Image (cartoon, rainbow, N blue to C red; front, side, top):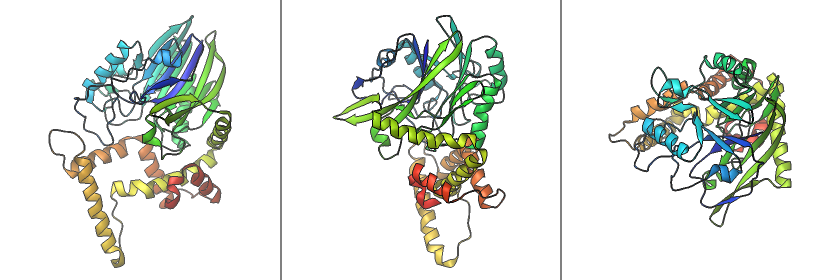
Length: 415
């Protein structure tokens, strides 16, 4: 049988569908459903960050569209709870009505953490869905999305004894970074050490690297499989994705191949197609730059220092509102900056779609919760501060600057 791994999928992505992708029958597609599918009248849940939703009027027959026998969608991500437990339940019910299996989130924490078991042609696959801690995480008896907690390793070990293959569908890592941060790489490898055969990564919205590690395969980020093109038109590498195809025989991965897909937007049509030969060659060069540091710990550390310091200077420093001493020459500039940010906070606080007014402090507390609860944000902040305060040896160099300038050009002015 074939197992096809897809990245982030937005249910409202397509206006008209023209299918250029074909797989052999007896294939299973596993992807991440980024958008809850709810009614337009659903109330937004309090959180920091955007709320997105899928449109039920967009009728996507995923099995027919990808020419596969079965579709399984991960719901353990940072948007499945955008409309609360009611929205999550509605999404699960909608997928079930379309013959699509879901995993990684549910209306109670116990069922949210349970694996999905798929049996086809005498082969049994167990799939866990997990994401970083954030708004809408399941805990105690509260439903929501299953997070990567310390129990996952023992759960993998136990499941490995009962199925042929274990796949962990993992939503996390730093968005728009072509490399995982070192602790995330170590986490993914630890999942393989526990018994997972495949780590199926998503969330970065651009392709990241991949590697064969011991007995498993790790795909750190596959990119956007289906998304509204207009939303990402100014983001490099956000409109193509990695699509690994695994061949499973006698309960083992006997071979696998990589293809890349491209999202086009022309003549009011959104087209998902295979990459052309020239595009494929460019994608291979990009992926080589992503992959090479994975086997070189010091180089990955150096690149992540470059990335984290830029992210801190560009975004995190302002979000955290750390008070830096300003001289008299900059006092007016500082005052104008603070007034501007307070205005932005007020605008953000009124965009939550809630019945009561949200004060600035309410919104900022939610933002700060997200920065400290979510491992990717927390790791980027601590890495950057470790470099800037001298706790870590500064490994940045002309080589890392050139690499990050090329791969993340929007950060050039924040080095």
